[in-house]
Image (cartoon, rainbow, N blue to C red; front, side):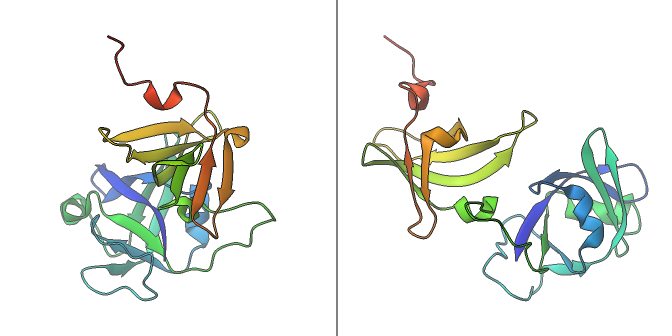
Length: 184
């Protein structure tokens, strides 16, 4: 299954949700035949069919609200019924669109190990779209004495990606991975 986004907050009294979408074109939601809601901790990516507590839903409405997707489902009639689903993931079982050579889906990057000059520095948590038109590679820093995340803009010249090997070679500008450290 493919994660499309998360239900961020309830909008109004009719059970609509503002959505933190992870897809390039949220308008495509209206074309998808199978949508599934699942709790945030439930990973449905390796699953073909959802099991409880995940549940299949049908889109009742879709609109954009201040450049964010706003969705409602037939099975969730109002604001009161919506409350338990805040933060839940929205997934689909629909087949993915074919990609051109050299293209990949954002979810293909998740879990790839990242190396700089042959040394492992972390692993990709996700790719986030930005309003500037490029993706932000969110990296979990695994270097000794480090923790947390690093956000690295996807600049093609900085990345050599081998998705089959789950390996990314990163050649960032000097100091990019150390922007959060304070000089003595």
